Length: 221
Image (cartoon, rainbow, N blue to C red):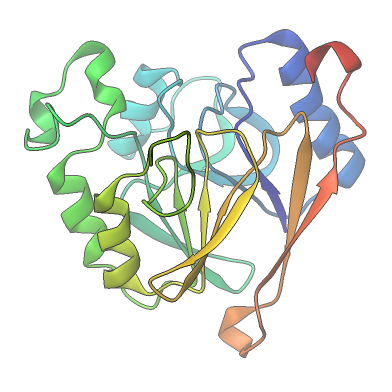
């Protein structure tokens, strides 16, 4: 299974990098951790929305609709799907302290990019999760002289106990064990791609492997 970090495919060069990964690797299934910005894809792809998306497309997917021009793309928004034998859940959006206690219905315009307490509570009720996708990082994973993580993501790790949590947004590779879960912040798709092996439903160990992205044009790296 192909796993991709942030894509930012509204940029033409980065969109071409994305599509070349699909053409060259011919994946059967793809997981992606947000800031996708292109929704017509050559293979079935499950993603969480980031803070940079076409929010009208994302909201249509939240409502269970199929937006015009979108193909082979599935939003994980406090929902779960079985992908290549793994139970994959996702929390879409990023954290804004001033909007967290709002209901999702109260979010308008660009504020629709955030997750709310309702989204986290719904995600926490999911069961038997093997892989959790989030755009926002938990605390204890990254440091910029301060910890940019979100404790609500830590709460999800404790509630769901996934084997693996894959994180976007920060566009750098970092790994840590948090609340008994292996948590990996993914490098962006123009630097690395990842493969995920193992079928959790068959009792195999889930293993993530990183690969340098030789498909990206030099100017897009």
